[in-house]
Amino acid sequence: MFTRHFLGTAVLALAASGALAAQDHITIGMALEPPNLDPTGGAAAAIDEVVYANIFEGLTRFAPDGAIVPGLAESWDVSGEGAVYTFHLRDGVSFHDGSKMDGEDVVFSLERARTEDSTNAQKALFAGIETVELVDPLTVKVTLANPDGAFPFKMAWGDAVILAPETAEQAATAPVGTGPFAFDNWTQGDSVDIARYDGYWGAAPALASATFKFISDPNAAFAAMMAGDVDAFPNFPAPETLMQFEANPMFKVIVGSTEGETILSINNKSGPLADVKVRKAIAHAINRQEIIDGAMHGYGTPIGTHFAPHNPDYLDLTGQSAYDPAMAKRLLEEAGQADLKLRLALPPPAYARRGGEIVAAQLRKVGVQTEISNLEWAQWLEQVFKGKDFDLTIVSHTEPADINIYARPDYYFQYDNPEFQALMVELEKTAEPARRTEILHAAQKMIADDYVNGYLFQLAKTGVANSKIEGLWENAPTQANDLTGVRWID
Image (cartoon, rainbow, N blue to C red):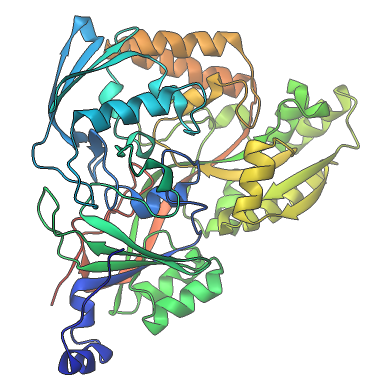
């Protein structure tokens, strides 16, 4: 376990006044506590928000602008018409326990992720792999079943980080990675501490340590920022207070985009919801702008399918499910569901709890009654995501370019369309950009036509930070609080 070291009584006195402590330690606010700290064994975005690029690293990684850049692989070659990737690993990389990281760890991690009994939440990332071979200690060759130009992108996900076989089983509670920060301590229900790893292979971060503080209540988050108990809240849960921070020179407001498609998820196999007419009625009962204004205070971009508007392959389909309560009522009558009653399960984020109340009111106007259940995050993961025991829920899918989840019939909203699955298989095999765009447009249109879910808005990244902090990500190309470039300025 790694602990912070202090420099004596004089320094402690100055630190108490904020004179020195702020120079190399930061406290980051987060609305949700991760259920565990293993990004290869859990679906919660909060896991990556703590560990991605801080504790764990992959062969490649996302840069702040979304570009895919080298990670533990300093370079890679592509052969076999795009089906063979040879990764050249960095020399001199060690895990936080001092053991050497080499090709054997890469082979172990990729094989572990793609085994039949793997608990990886994104096993589809590894489905195209046929073989993983150790060429030499610093060279690994991955052969795919088909050419895949997106393979470096897939290896940048938090689900594809590299672990050592000796410590992989403890990653959930005491992770050992190769990143610039090592795990220090986890106070359940409160915070996670990390500390700078002196043996890091790359440039040392400016921060000596960091604390991720979990504050789910928006009012408490506001109070913590104002009191200085939290230095930055990259995904601030109380957007209605941002104007107060903007007017205060002690703070800066950082507004950007995320990969978070916020959707009214529909259980496609739950009784009347199996009928596309019912799902279409629900979609037309939803007033997106009212939800954005009421739950997010205007922050958010309306979407009509599961795709980020900032992506060059985005297709604007919002008109296809435009707010039309009269149509919604008519469709419900045609489906014989004029008195429909549904369960609406809401996880803790403010966008879900506040948005859920607005959605319930909108559905009530077209004759759909909802029974709201407010679930804690672990309960939501167990009941909704794993157990599929729900009718409706609201959640932001923050994984990048993840429309391929609709090709998984066992995914929690249980959409099973062989035509869509075939599209994703074709996308996997296609490297030509224009054809990939055509396929992605067809995929977006198909799930919109099937009204798989109610597509609400792209989650904005609304952050607040002490004005003397720089280097926090403005946009979120993946779910991360990357602290490698963060520092305090005078």
